[in-house]
Amino acid sequence: MTRIFADRTEAGRALAAEIARKGYQDPVVLALPRGGVPVAFEIARAIDAPMDLVLVRKIGTPGQPELALGAVVDGPSPQCVVNEDVQRQADISDAQFEQEKQRQLAEIDRRRGLYLAGRERVPISGKTAIIVDDGIATGATARVALKALRQAGPAKLVLAVPVAPAATLEAMADDIDDCLCLETPDPFHAVGFFYRNFDPVSDEEVATLMAGLSVERR
Image (tube, rainbow, N blue to C red; front, side, top):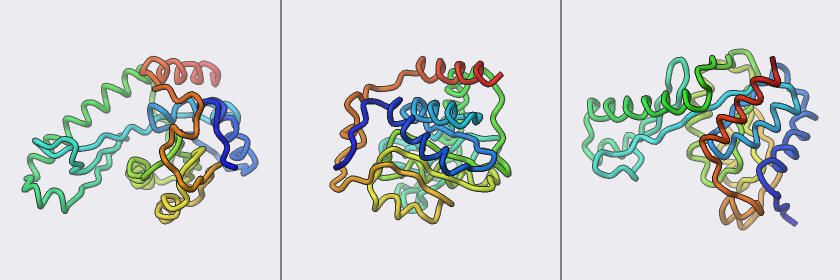
């Protein structure tokens, strides 16, 4: 029977126990905001690892913002994924794409400042990078983040989530070195279906959790 988590904190603690058994070398916990942050917070505390955020922004098509032209992920050298079919069909020039990309990078910078108050990025080169979310449905956002993180040179790239469809995880197998998922229900429905409390995570909660972990690790 599929487990239903009380909230993201309980899911994070359950996932942390599994990660601790793995004994990963030099782990760094990387959360996908906002829902992944409370989950990742519990993992980072349990394994005494530094934690950072991976901010991903969709690059929408001009005039059709819901149509994904690509995505950009923050980092010292921001990585971009382009949907070339959409760019060609929508007749979007490289200059138009670059303009929208820069707009999303500005939003990423704003959110990083809001969430982390100027704290430096946690280096992941040569480390075990553990990317965490509160669950995965299609995996689109996580796959973009994983592709970008791979460019940063981690020794190992691990995906850790409380719940996801087995088919989605199988489709992501080439993007990761290891995967920890507590529940792979079928049928899947939606991530929130597997939490009793799945209230939205606020910007303030993200900032508070990140600040609290930073203080604990001093």
